[in-house]
Length: 119
Length: 116
Length: 358
Image (tube, rainbow over all chains, first blue to last red; front, side, top):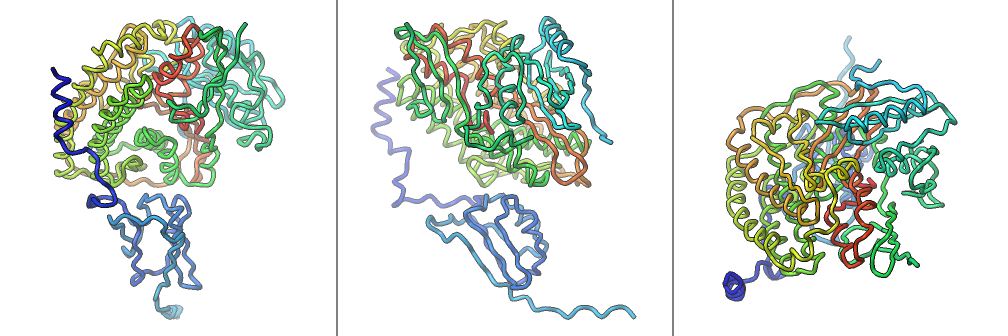
């Protein structure tokens, strides 16, 4: 009898799965989708590079470049929590497949003249 | 100097090791695992046994070039970990129940003794 | 006259590459020899290049199913080196994520096991219910399987009121569903015919073979690391290990189903007792000394040994995973079993080969 119930409910119910490419569930707010870098406040300190476990981030001071290897990134958010200027944020947007391997962003940091040595 | 050390009974030679392990088995200890460390050109073994959630550790120093005795004759389950250390540290155990001859994980053309 | 046939590394019922050389007389197994090494990644060597905080992420990637408990055990071992007491709220968060992990791991195993004896619709049901648990984990930690909840010195994410409601709601929906599953696994005639009396291990044999987890408890040994003093928070939660006496495949299945109910109970208790407050303690310096930490994973007891030398990376990390302890028991249980039953017996130890080889 329980069997019959199960069969009837399974026939009348809509499927438990989604018809993926046509019906997409909105990502949860906490979902770690992709790393977004906002270069405006970056001071090229390189802490994110040092903290990154898979060595995905590369910061070049001379060229003022911030580089992320998306294929190496493991979404641990160490860089997000360690950034002193809150330049790196994690967005819940799903990363697209077939993305480029590297994200290279130039940092528009103005070189401040070094403080004059104390007299 | 190390601050936190684990309590372990020092074992002097292979015969004493087998005798102690035999005694532990009769006392109803369960073989947990064995740890191999590099120390003073040789290797330090730490055997871990468990009974009623209490650990009993044995520490045994293997001199360079010495062939350590296998305890897989007493606890059969020791054979996997001993074969692992044959692979990773390039040791040779005497009296292994099943000897993979250094090819448990590694193939003939993989690096030799990667952890040593 | 015996024949040796290979079983695996590619086999329809095994999700992971374990290879067994089976010595067969007609269709009865007379000897078995495991051969490993298909997924050996050398993670114990890899820690040389990473500092002790980054090693947490390596440990979590040892296994995709019990990843949270790998990370938690590693961080607890390192905290032993630093001699720090982490805030109580962080400990409760670890317990909650660890138990959620156990629920999804056991549901996954029940599904794979049903697939192993050819009960496809039961497999789909189990995995459908598991999806609810994974959704909750994704809502809390941001990832489905690699949670990264634990870090040295506490927890990396706090649970909000909303998360707690989600967990309680999940418990209320999944528990009746597990009751439905239990009916099939425990009472179904065909399932019983297939499992009862298969690959029986006596209490003494299971203990001496050094097995761990449900394999050990299915044989009547009441050993569960959650009861021990290593992780004493479970004492306040009223935990009792699930034990079955028979020692066959059926008993091991029943242990895992009972553990699912235990996990729901522990989750509810942990949530009701969770205090407010900080979730991290600051840690200064580098680890020195050596420590051993053991916890109970879904598959059994995991042993972590860490040794630090006062530098930023650890000198040695040794992980004894539960499947590593359970594989020798296959050598003892497989002889005398029919070839058609071998996949089921291999599945009852819940083999995780990526764990085993690291």
